[in-house]
Length: 538
Image (cartoon, rainbow, N blue to C red; front, side, top):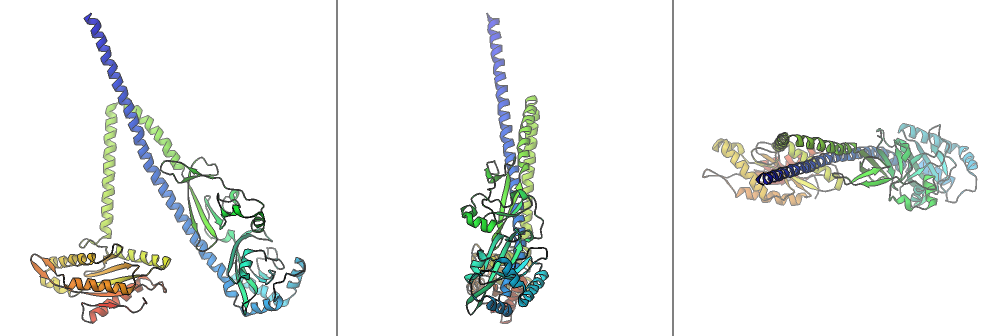
């Protein structure tokens, strides 16, 4: 009886051991799965962030290159519209906007037979070849092309009527026009820019410049780069399969069929297959044309132009990370089942590596902070401050924001060092910075640019406001001596004030030079003063 009970008890004990062991295995596998998910998510986040930055940078660079090219193209009609010889030709040839009853060939023969128009055509060809432009042509008030400079191999535009083009409508209204359209004679995608020619306020014609879409940029477009027009239609791409297709939800889908034929020479445009891709760590990724892996998408609108640069970057690496996660989980779980001790060692190793990585990140962050900060006062050092100043200048150019800067110099600081010693001089500098900090806004930045020389950047501040801030600092410094080991050290400060000149897009060096001159003037007037540079306006 006792033997039977003992056997049952032994079986029960061993059963619980198996259950506990199985639970440990399950917990271990679950922990490995969660851990691998966290690590995979981190890697995915880094990959997505990296690819998104590359995509946006690529789009911005190409957009800037296109804008530079288009700036030259659209300025040609603006300059030529004021040419009196062109105005004379237009005013005498067709002084009204009535459409001619002649056929295209008849009009072409008529225009080509005119010596004055032939001379104008030769002149347009000379201008076109000098600036590497595809086409320049002149339209009369009826929209007929009466003279054109073009490549020899291209069809003749002269005699064609373009009165149905949007850029011509704009010119008729007396404003500059622009439009993407498929060329009527050569069926090439192109951008057109127009400028009206007016005589005594009367519209007599227009100057039109054209650039083929293929010549928008001198940069090589990768497979994932394409350009869309203002209606969302792909007009330039390395992948020919997506040309003249449209992005989902684009405005071109709302255009009537007549406008599609006029502008794009097509009855219907195919919509690109772009769908959201739900993926941990890349929720904003997209599926591109039934791809097996996600893409990140970035775009950059060319400044004030009807084209947008679009960039796609594939995230194949994410799929590989997910596959690696599964494989890693299976392998580590198997190793854990075979040896819990080995698992403990791996866990300890992972913990150690993670801790070491965190320490390296903290150390790098601290080193980066030290490289950009003045060790004594804690404010920005010279290099960091000039970077901040250049950033503020770029922001001022982009958004037309004013900003000012104060140049401060502690009066007779060498005398303080000589009388009280360098440790007390350092204390004066720290005390000086603390006084300034109490009188600045959160957006203001102070930097130490020399021994006792400091600069203060005041964003969105005109010089009259900057003058008030400078005077407040000067008064506070004058009545707040530094205390060091029961020793009172009084000192004053001289301040130069200047406002950045937006209209001149003033360089950093010129701006600093004006600040220094104002500071020098304050010194010359006897120190402990604020002098405002009068080279700019409030």
